[in-house]
Amino acid sequence: MKNKNLLKLLLLCCCILILGWKSNAQSFKLIKQIDTLAKIARVDNLGNLFVVTPANELMKFNPDGKFLWNYTNNSFGDIDQIDITDPLRVILYYQAYQQVVVLNNNLSEISSYSFNNNPNQQIALVASANNNGFWIYDQLNRELKKLSNNFIDELKSGNIYQRNGIDMNAVYMLSNDQYVFINDAGEGVRIFDRFGNYYKTAVINPVKAFEVEGDELIYQQDNKLLRYNFMTFKSEEIKLPIIKAGSTFSYRLKRLFILNEKGLTLWALNAN
Image (cartoon, rainbow, N blue to C red; front, top):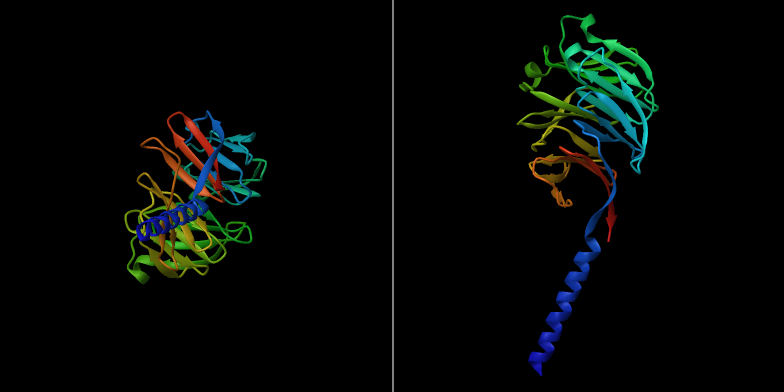
């Protein structure tokens, strides 16, 4: 009798554990397969998907994967970076030409600017800043700068190598209202405050790009999607659908996209 009661208790505990696991489990639902080759893909704060093709065409899709608008400009070569932090302002950077192009949310050109006007700098990265400004990283002078919407200097960090002993191999940059985040390849994500002062390093290793949601950095490492809290140092894996080796993927605002040699798929996260 005791053995039967013990067995029932064990079965009950197992059921509770399974139900508890299922209640916290999450799954992705396929929204759309887009048969467009892409080298860059990003999701904005409204859930819109932006894709840069190998031919350097920028394409915008709505949250359901419906094509909306496109933009091409063959004057400046390759699009190396796209920043959609502000969904009403799309920033493209053509690094080889040191050229910034700013578009509105319909992908119509608003303005452009060439950093070649100043031969004493070499801009590696450009990102959106508040008040329609820009953050730029000057690789030649090891300096982080904030520019106005008219590309006028508003603040400078000074030489980061001289001040902090950090000689960055900067490959990606993103900002929010409080911080600027720079992927220093092989070393981690360097975090600076809104005045350009070095704050800390998140010792993680994104493939290149990453996303920021609150205090969390979301990034791809090898074939995993990870979430890292740079305040608590807690790391967590986000379970993915089955993907091919060599795929590139990113996650933002419960939207996941996966890039491979055949195109990309757009997914939505559902809690079970």
